[in-house]
Length: 421
Ligand SMILES: [Fe+2]
Image (tube, rainbow, N blue to C red; front, side, top):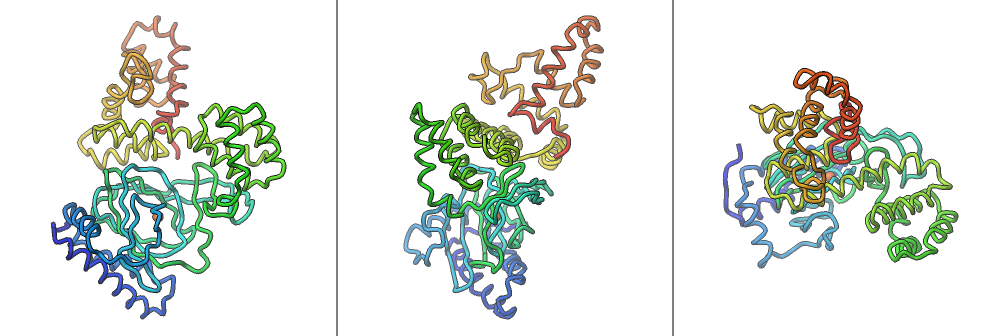
């Protein structure tokens, strides 16, 4: 139970005091990297009585006027909206991060520490990466598997262990959500700090080609502007580039280009790189799927509907989705909840007019409901035979099965019909 406490100066002082005390405690362990996550977890745990939504707001207000900022670790707020270093010593930082719109950012850490939810809530997912092929320390191919997911609320604290032993994503649900991170500045042997893309790529977002290669910008410009020689430029770039640079070009292009234009570039780039084709194609399909849902989520205001879209963006399987819904809505049947939400979000005369970008009429909605419960197209047909004229259903069985398969393959609904993560 977290007590309400509205004294912002109190929490600010406490945060800074906690950083100093954590440094002292760490010194007792000779600043050993392996000891710091436990120390940070303990230090944030002691701050919980000062956490409240009011205190979070007051903290942000007090940071605007008169607070002498320490040297900022992330002055451009590249991670956080904004990211604010509230306290620092020679060896550690205490940062406050605000978040407006969630985004699945799966990463490991080049430091040890702990984080706590100060305000709002977050969908927290942990992963393991099995490396299959290594291009370099900056790019690896393999499989990213979900270990578990949970809903974190104000006052929840989790430790951060550096390196591949702790890979996670936090999808922030409220606008804003605030987190506090107490962390070492860096952990020896935990570099580079890799990010991950579902389902198969680990990459270093700060590797030299990511930052320095301007040639890829010209290739993306050629596609953005519709130049006739765009394919030729992409071909020449790819022929001289290594796999990391080709991947970086595609990553940049995925942000900048519409899907049809991107896939035209993709086909040119992977013509000479079968490994990138095999591992990259599902990654970029998933990125476009997530981007579509993230964009749609911005226009949805009802909190349950926003949570449903957060699940569609982040959850990897039906069992994962069911577990979250059972925790949040213990008295409701998950399939029924989803049916209610989809009947609202997939309504409209055309897909364009529907919040989900999918329009289901009453018949399609009934098939969707049964598919959600019975999981297999043939079981859907059997159930419909019970409800309607059996001969009529039999005649329409191929079309019904096709509709079921389209749900399973739908970029929007696919996670609902994926039984194994
Ligand atoms: Fe993290």
